Amino acid sequence: MAEKIITGSSQIKLLEKLCNAIAVSGDEGEVRQIVLEEVKPYAETVKVDALGSVLVTKTGKGPKRVRVMLDAHMDEIGFMLVNDEGEGLFRFETVGGIDVRSLPGKQVLVGKDKVPGVIGARPIHMTTAEERSKKIPLDALRIDVGPGGSGKVKVGDRASYATRFRRVGSSIFAKAIDNRIGCAILIEILKNAPENVDLCLSFSVQEEIGLRGAQVAAYAFNPDLAIAVDATPAHDLPVHDGEENTFYNTKLGAGPAIYTFDRGTLSDPRLIRLLVETAEREKIPFQYRQPGGGGTDAGAIHLARAGVPSVSVSVPHRYTHTPISLLRMEDWKNALALVSAALTRITPELLAQERR
Image 1 (cartoon, rainbow, N blue to C red):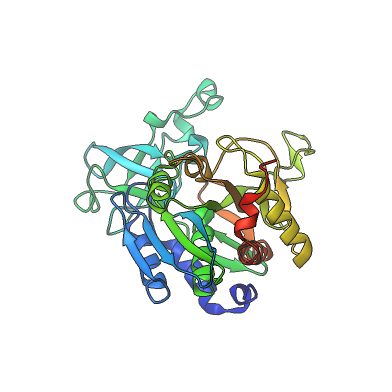
Image 2: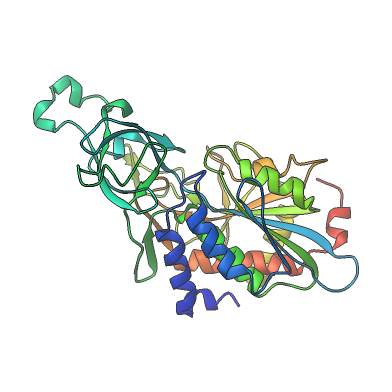
């Protein structure tokens, strides 16, 4: 089953469609529609909850099934227009974690009609040496859609990078790999759902601004355990700050990253063992995500109701939260293979073990 995600053109096309769609936090409708179209033929129930997350269930067969929640967030980082200054110029705020230093000159698409624009700043010719030595403040930047575009967008509209998906050999370049890759993995798992568990799939909203959709979804599902499937930054360039990089949180090509802990979660040790033992038995490459910033929807899920044993599995990718990210297709394939194989090994006895 995992091989289909690499060789099947339909899977590449699905990821392309997901990545090219615009779904900045709080305005996830375009990706939500794609997800709904993909899951309805395979799901038992499909619901869009009050926040806009897509909640999907598929019941397994046989006795003593475990209720397993898989989560992937649909939203991406981006921008919101906050003030119309005339002649197509708009002041804006960032939505999610964005490094303002990377913004000047970047092309964006704005609003439902995807009106093209550019993030503008004062030209370098008009700045002093002192100004050039400092980071440009956000309030000095504007999104410029030109006079012809000013009537087509409005305050409150979201904007996203205009980057288009492309595949180059074994690599994929796209915006919003975080976390359209997780959405693609969950869709493929649903299409080939194991029968030993009851699957609860959450395609969540508003992860980038506080794990909000997953918190609501976990309360609704009330699962026995959860796996958050996400994308994680690969800090693996050979030179960092002029020195050899000896700290790698994850590396491209080393397989899916299993979380032991992050900013919001101490992963359940029983689930870590399940994933590691599965990878070793199936000869699936994997790596441990090393400590550092960031987190996943597991940070909200594991606190739902009386608590949910949780763990995260992520696909490493470079240049997170920038206009374009890069991943290796083998890491995508192996992440799918790992989660799929682990699901088939989940039994009530797993959670009956002591949590240590």
